[in-house]
Structures are given as C-alpha cells and as structure tokens.
Amino acid sequence: MTGRPNDVRARVPRHKDNDHTHEAAKERRDFLAERAGVTLDHVGAFSFDPGVTAGNIENFIGVAQVPIGLAGPLRINGEHVNEDVYVPLATTEGTLVASYNRGMRILTEAGGVKTTIHERFMQRAPVFHFDDAGGARDFAGWVDANLGGIREAAEATSSVAKLSHIERYSVGPMLHLRFNYETGDAAGQNMCGKATLAACEWIAANHPGGARYTLSGAMDTDKKHSQLNVLHSRGARVIAEARIPSALLKERAGVDAATLFRARLNSFAGSVMAGSANNGMHAANGLAALFIACGQDAANIAESHTAMTFVRLEDEGETYYWSITLPALIVATFGGGTQLPTQGECLDILGCRGKGKVGRFIEICAATVLAGEISLASAVVAGDWVESHDRLGRNR
Image 1 (tube, helix red, strand yellow):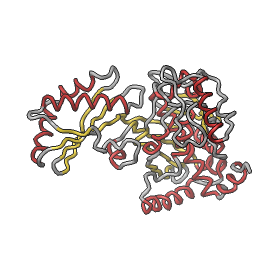
Image 2 (cartoon, rainbow, N blue to C red):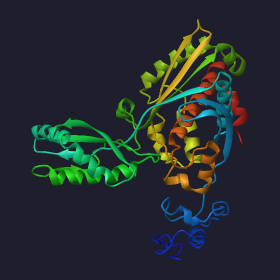
Image 3 (cartoon, rainbow, N blue to C red):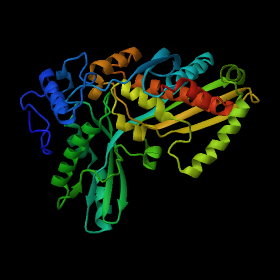
Image 4 (cartoon, rainbow, N blue to C red):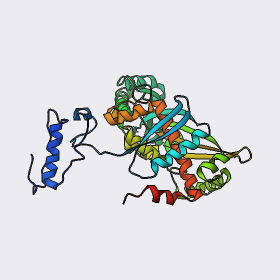
C-alpha cells in the first residue's frame, strides 16, 4: 500500500514485473477502499484472467458491466454477409434495444437491407515545413516522383499495412500529406502512425537538404469529426439501403411512406440550419452499443456517427427508398479490445471474430444503423416516441 488517506500524493499501487493479476487488481481496490471508503464488489467480480487485459488497460481494478440486449433477426443482403443475424447491443438506455429490434423486423419483412462498402482507408497526416510556399510546392513534386521509396519504407513496418495513396494540402510554407492505408482487419491507427513515421524518416533522409516534419498536422482528424472525412472517407465508407412498402410501414410503425417523406424534408432543413454532422436520427446510438459490446474503441464514435440519409418515394408513393451512408466507420475484428473474452463472445454472435471478418462487421454495423433510423423516425412522426421512452426507459 502506498500512502495514507490524508496523503493526497499517494500513488496508485503498481507491480513492475506483472501488473495484470488478480492480486494487483485487489491491491488497487483495497487502496480505494482505504482512501475513498468504497466497496467495489461488482467492479471486482469478473470471469476472466486479468492477464488477458495486458495491452488494453493499465492499473486494472475490474470491469464495468454494461447490460447487453439482443435484437433481430436482421436480414442483410450484402457482399460479406447474406443471411439473418442477431445483434448484441450494450447499453444502459431503456427503449434502445426495443427500437432497433422493431426497425430490424420492418427491414427483414421488407426483404432485407442491401449493404455496399465503397472503400476503406486509415490515415496519418504529417505536415512538412519549408521556408516558403515554393519549397512546399517543389516538395509535392518530389513526393510524387519518390512514391515507390516512400511506400517501401512505410510498408516495411507491418505485414498488414499497405499504402494506397497520399493526399496533398498546401498552406503557406507547409505541405500536409495525408497517408491512406489499407489495414486488414484492424482499425489501424497505431499501425498507420508507425508506418508513417518510418516514411517520414525516409523522406527526411532522402530529400535534398533534408525535411522538417511534424508527424501529425491534425488533418488525419483522429477521433474528431471533419468534413474531410465526409468527402474522402476515414475507416469504411459503407451504405445501407432498403425499399420498404408503405403498407408495411403503416402496419408495423403506424405511419405511411408519404408522411415519413414529408417529415424527412423538415428534418433535412433542420440539420442544415444546425450544421449537424448527421442529417439522420441517431446513428451514434446503435454504433455505440455495438462498439461497447464488440470491443471497439468507443472514442471512434466521434467520427463513425457521421452520416448522410437519402430518401425518395417510389412506385407512386407505395414504396419508401431509404438509405444511410456512413463515410467514416472505424471498426476492427482483430486486435485491440476484440480479443477480450466478453467482447469476443459478442463478435462470435455476429460471426465476426478474427481475421477476414471486418467486411462482415462493417455491413452489420451499417444495417443496424438503418434499422434504428427507421424505428425512431417512425416513432417521432407517429407520436409514440415519448410514450415509448416513458414506458420502457424508466427504472426509478
């Protein structure tokens, strides 16, 4: 034990040799019991060896047990998944699972969701510094002429990362380079950072006169929304779309296609006025619940929730075409939190654990988001949104 309750500088106990053990976790819980007077019976109750958390967390004391609900079946007609799936959603928000479940029923009865992945890249964006704008312009030409050497240096750091292309953005005497990588089944932020550092060092060693750089000039927009992501993608750019009969919407959600379409025009205008990163309803809800259940980096919701909804009436108003585009969906099925026991089990539910499964997971995420859009939009227009939350979302 380090320090006493009145010693404000007492350090959290650590074990240099092996800090991911039951004993180390208990020592830290006892430390908290002495200093804060708290009993961590639930935090300290977990079913796995703390050793598996090495590389995922420091100063481990236990677990945050988030309830997991199951929604589905959801029929997906995609390029990586073509079947009914059941979706685990970890959340503390009452009504959320029920709402997504209703949207999944509507989509499945309409024939399913079509999913399409357009591209998938992860970025790191260093900035190079010169005496004037002319030097930055000349450097851009040198980068184009030496792309082969830059690519070889970057890819030597990883058996997975593949440098696809480099975007260029000039500002005054600086040139921002946005490196775009394919990263296999990993999300790839750390992988891309390592590869880009090697590339920058190669550039500095080979560019005439050297080159000064900062590894991140903030144009990679890591864990921040940006318009650049909307235009050029970060993570996966994936689209989920469906055609839903108006009669089915009326039967299952109490609102017809024409009424939903008129409401969508109103919300489009509101989204523009608000400057929203998402002109839909609540992509962050379903994605956050999936991310927590399946071991994703929850902070990536800052980028991943960005979305563009596009709708239209077809068949003289008898069919509602509904699509949502996610231009910056950042997910993984290998590495990071996906290897933890609970999160791995949830990925198993989806058939998405391990290598070769990230395309399947991307499509499931997008289809789940569309299900949530349909259910919430219908609830708002039909007038049962507040009543549903009052009935299912109260635990007081």
